[in-house]
Amino acid sequence: MKAQTPTATASPETIAFRAALDVVGAALPEVADSIRQELADQRSHLKLIASENFASPAVLLAMGNWLSDKYAEGSPGHRFYAGCDNVDAIESRAVELAKSLFGAQHAYVQPHSGIDANLVAFWAVLTHRVEAPELERLNAKDVRDLSAEDWEGLRRKLGSQKMMGITVEPQTNLIDYDEVRKRAREERPLLLIAGYSSYPRRINFRTFREIADEVGATFMVDMAHFAGLVAGKVYTGDFEPVRHAHIVTTTTHKTLRGPRGGMVLCDAELAGTVDRGCPLVLGGPLPHIIAAKAVALHEASQPEFATYARRIVDNAAALAEALQSNGVTVVTGGSENHIVLVDVRPFGLTGRQGEAALRSAGVTLNRNVIPYDTNGSWYTSGLRLGTPAVTTLGMAAAEMQEIAAIIAGVLRATAPTKTTSGKPSLANYTLDEPARSQAEGRARDLLGRFPLYPEIEL
Ligand code: DSN
Picture (cartoon, rainbow, N blue to C red):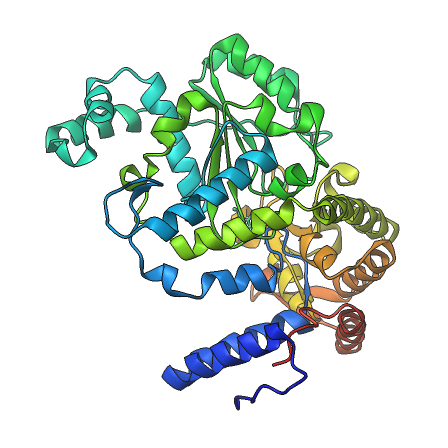
């Protein structure tokens, strides 16, 4: 794509992104072209992936600079490298913003992803709860002084911990707290974890904490999906995780609308170990991403963010209701967060077929297993829809009705093809072209009224 020259009337964001892409394009044109194409793609498809969002231009721009060139292992004021004054200032600010936004005693903003944040949390809990002389030596000394035998001993002890999960109640597809309590009493876990990526309901964290206390477990919440709803004070009281859990992990790019990354919030007791996440668990921190996290945390502290978070939830409830009015089966019959989980089996489809058919009609979402799914996690029987991104665009209840009608129309017009043995295919399908084209037109109309990054002209 040909680079454009900034005009006198161009917005600062337009000037910034055009200039950045011109510079990138001069180095490797096809990469700049793909970045431009990605914007075109996100502008021309309805984004309903529950774990995605649109970060602000300020968040995006904070990532593209020379902070990326710094190594900063350690924590603010305690680094293994010289020259970290500016990274210290940025990281300290991000930590303060995170603590204040979530009411946490401590925040660790270095994890590169949600998995990294979870590994740091597991490490911290194991360090505090498992009796291992190697761990005591590790806490007393520098990680670089541990011997090969120390590491081998640690791996054996930490790796011997069992993991087990609890499924939802088969009739309602809801968490059965009595069952959680019963299993916890039987298993006496070291760590009780609550969190979700496709459960469309709230979780009562007070009850989980009571169960954890009763069986002597540490209580951890992975709030990656709903961190924005916590930041925006939609989840309060029993449903607010930070006050009830000993340790909370999250990503920063989902409902929180920040850069792709992770974070840990914890009680002061665990702070020292959590802060040693790098180099114990993580590679070098990403100072440019931490800068963007600071910007996003500041944005999430503004009153408008609370309004945004409330709208995400209202939109998901409206979408779930509208889908059901259009004859679509919604798991648990509704939504109390940003997620709507659809069962596509009544259409004779797999999730994979539904996902592909909808993408061809201008709707981007992902297939997902539903409770007790017999189709496995590749084909699945469900679709997961999320409202964070369309809410960022400014859509509300009326638009949720339109989205529900588009989705229902496409699913009705899609049918599996037959395999050579005469069985319905799990992957291949046919989609009636007039229905597809009509759905695509409706999606484009909607996106035309709620443009992505209207301030950016490329
Ligand atoms: N991969 C993420 C999701 O899509 O839910 C989970 O972190």
